[in-house]
Length: 486
Ligand code: FAD
Image (cartoon, rainbow, N blue to C red; front, top):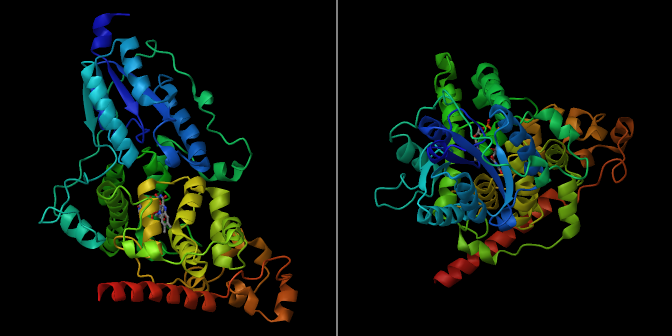
């Protein structure tokens, strides 16, 4: 191989940036000369945060799509990047590498260690921001400390700064060093589930950059105009469903931001635009919290919750996971999650509140189940959101705010369309009882073909009683804090 060509080449390490458009590391590398594109499935550093089943399915599809975009030049490996990358650089004779930064604590530690190792080998390292609109260390309060509350973080901290970076095009010419190194191949990663539970999920999604772009255009042209009003309704398709594409970096938040900002909308839709941009802001805020408080996935942000009287009830947990709690909104949400790898945001809040408040099971249990089953499982958003629901988070819902799944259902799924989609055994019930079948008279149940305890479960808890018990457990926490304080 021509030594000069390889010395001017750059190894681009793809991670959560599985795209070629608006990819700052790839763009930089392509401008220098040839590129060796590499993906490594890290088997060493993630620990308990190794990708779950649904994410692994998505990753498999996304790597196929990226490899196609790179004309088959992507080299795929698994193992410890701290061993593999120096070896690859030496074998290929490459003197420069580039990557887009990642923000999970274990990734920050690993990437820092890699930077030191490869610099010792005289390799140039170029890192870029390809995943966030604003770097978390740049947005601070006047006193130099990080924000803990979303609105001032976003309105004062972010929106008064320089606008986010404008998206880059795909590199004009991308010449790859495909012959320099042979990869292990995608199949060796064994990412696809061995049990065939994913066909329904596969119909819903098109992982990869093309699917992400199509979804963004479809959302902006068809649904953005009613986003603010529609985003809380799980019975209609009103949100973007971009979360897995954003998580895997098949689309950058900058692309989503500018396509939304430049969409030609009438003045009556300005609120919809703002509302969507602020949801992208929530994604940023979650990453921001994780960056500044790296123990967020494990430790209660508010320490008083360390003393909370969580229950241990594996049967209740299993009923929640399987969608057999006997509470239709909760069951529909948990079944949507299992069948599609996704759950509507409003329903995530309802099932989350039910788990941590009505069942009083630790938020770690919900976080772990979501981690395994969501295609958009994201350490920052998942951890921050579970702490928000539990009341233990930075800018959390107060503990006494307990979502009532019946009234939430009546308000956000008024005709029971969502419940009927995922709990078809309740389809015969009149709308009045679709969210509370246990309140239906025996005759109505019989006419609807519903036998509680047989065709559909009896509720595993009484909503009123369990609500009261949760409030008492919380009051005990407060009393303890005030007696300690006095
Ligand atoms: P849209 O309404 O179209 O929003 C656009 C984008 O904004 C989303 O794709 C997402 O990137 C971001 N966003 C929207 N709402 C939030 C939010 N509350 N927090 C952070 N980012 C947000 N989101 C994840 O991406 N991964 C997770 O693992 C995750 N776990 C969650 C767990 C719980 C208990 C709850 C309540 C929420 C969780 N969320 C998570 C946030 C939110 O539910 C999803 O981002 C959203 O439902 C994705 O659907 P969408 O793309 O259609 O959202």
